[in-house]
Structures are given as C-alpha cells and as structure tokens.
Amino acid sequence: MKCEVEWMDRSMHMYKRVDILGVPFLQKKLRDTVELITRLILENQKIQVVTANPEIVMMGRRNPSYMELLKKADIITPDGIGVVLASRWIGEPMPERVAGYDLLHALMKEANAHGWKYMLVGASPASADGAAAKLQELYPNACYAGHYNGYFTKEEENKIIEHIKKEKPQLLFVGLGAPRQEEWVARHLPKLEVNVAMGVGGSFDVLSGTVKRAPEIWQKLNIEWLYRLLSQPKRWRRQLLLPQFALQVLWNQVIKREK
Ligand code: UDP
Image (cartoon, rainbow, N blue to C red; front, top):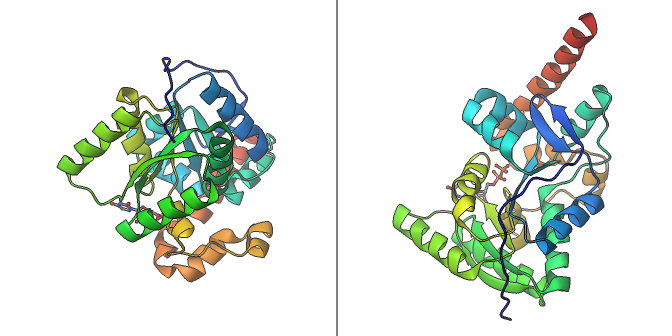
C-alpha cells in the first residue's frame, strides 16, 4: 500500500511529567500514551519516544550526554516496574508500566487502522527479517516500507537514512539496544520526515521468536526483569543497576525530608 503524508516542524506540547532521578517520565497509562501519540501523528508532529527502565535512568546518570538526550526526548514512558515503584515512593505515582514491546504493538494497531507507514532498523539479520514478517502478518493494513538489521557499516547507514528520507514513514522503530538506539534516533531524526521514532531494545528478537518474552503471569507479577535475568544470565551486570537505582531514589527522598 502506498501512503503519502505532509510534514510539519517539531513543536512543543505540555503534559504532566514525573522526574525520576533527573529523567522526565510521562505520567500516563499505555492507552492514554497511545492516544496522545496518535494525536501527535495526526497533527504531523515529529517526536522521539523513549521507553526507559531503571537501567536507562542509571546509564543517564553515568553519562551526561545521554542524560541530556533523555531530557530532550518528547515522550519517555516507564518501561519497568522499578520506575513505577519509584514514582510511588516520591508521591507522584505513575499509573502503570508502559513497556516498549506493548507500545510497539499498540502503535502498530493504530498504524493498521490508519494505514500508516512504518520501518524497522535493528537486531540481527534473522531477527529483523522475522520481525518484519511478523508485523506484516499481524497488521496487514499498515504500510510496510522496509527493514534493516542493526549491524550496518557507515556506508550502509547512509543508505538506510536515504531510504527513510524517501519513504517518510509515520513510525520508525529502532532496535539497537540502549543507549545506542536513543543516540541514533536523536542524531538522525532532525533530518528525517518521520512522526515517531522510538527505540525498542530487543523487541525484534521477541517478535521474530529468537528470544521469548516472559510468560504473562511473570509480567502480571511484575517480575519480568527476573525472567530476563534467568533466561539471559549474561545481563546480570546490567541488572546490578536495579538495586543502585532503588537506593538512589530512596536516598534522594531521605535528603529531601531532612531539608
Ligand atoms: N543490536 C543491534 N546492533 C548492535 C548491537 C545490538 O542491532 O550493534 C540489537 C541486538 O541484536 C538486540 C538489541 O539490539 O536485538 C538489543 O537488545 P536488548 O534486549 O539488549 O535491548 P536493551 O535491553 O538494551 O533495550
């Protein structure tokens, strides 16, 4: 299906955000987040969406340029129960976790309903092919405009950018892992005519079936992080950031109360 769209410059919108260790999170449920993004797409806005878990917040605290990028992102959703719990501890509760994988599917449902165009960049060649095939199968009325794996040379990257420029998709999903995907989007989005560019971590691996997402019961019990740790033990080093995140949030609260 061929879809043409017109474009408008990026503009600022006001919505309530919660500051967690310097990272401004949107205080909305998944459904309301999708409604907001859909409206922005229909208004032809250009936005960077970040789905941030405690690891991403801690990466920002260790890397000032990444933190600056996070602060400039248009929408940051709480992609981890740790972030939701932290918002409760500081008395500004976020209603629920908004995981990147769920947001990707919710936006693809909208793309299917509106006939929007989408492109994918990231993951291994097998995962990228599998994810593209799966999305076309699940959302046949959305306009598939191409996909690229995430192991490209500088030369190939230029070709990817040219293709995105030509296609002007409403949705660009980038699965290069954090922080690279956010940095990649921030670097290229200004010159692209894309409405929503969003980092999706390992979502293409899950879509293609290369990696299994935690069973629903683990997700409902808010222990998806534990499932990931058990199924991908090499992540343990990254997950050490979780207790550090919790301690930092609690410590900041103690300091605030003492003042
Ligand atoms: N990846 C990639 N190019 C790279 C490094 C990683 O496309 O140079 C992909 C990798 O294949 C995987 C994703 O990025 O699909 C990272 O997944 P992960 O679950 O680690 O995401 P994160 O937890 O960092 O968001």
